[in-house]
Image (cartoon, rainbow, N blue to C red):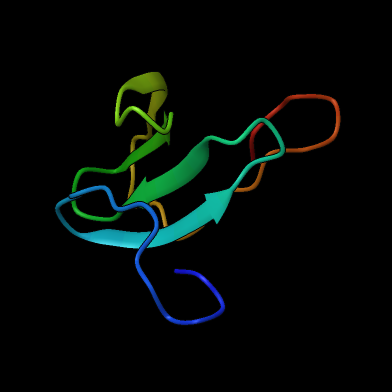
Amino acid sequence: MSMDKKIVWEFEASNALNARPLENGNVLVCLYSGTTVQEVNRNKEVVWEYKASSSVADAIRLPNGNTI
């Protein structure tokens, strides 16, 4: 959402708990019920995915490129 409250990009995700913009312009999305973290580009393509063995509430991308 822009400063003037206009939607500039959206991504439909079932049960998304958290979404963080990344420095490369992509978005890191945590999906709670699917125990999944996805990196999505601005074309709405999943470019990276991690499936956890339990629920995921949050994730961040570290400066070294790792995701926790």
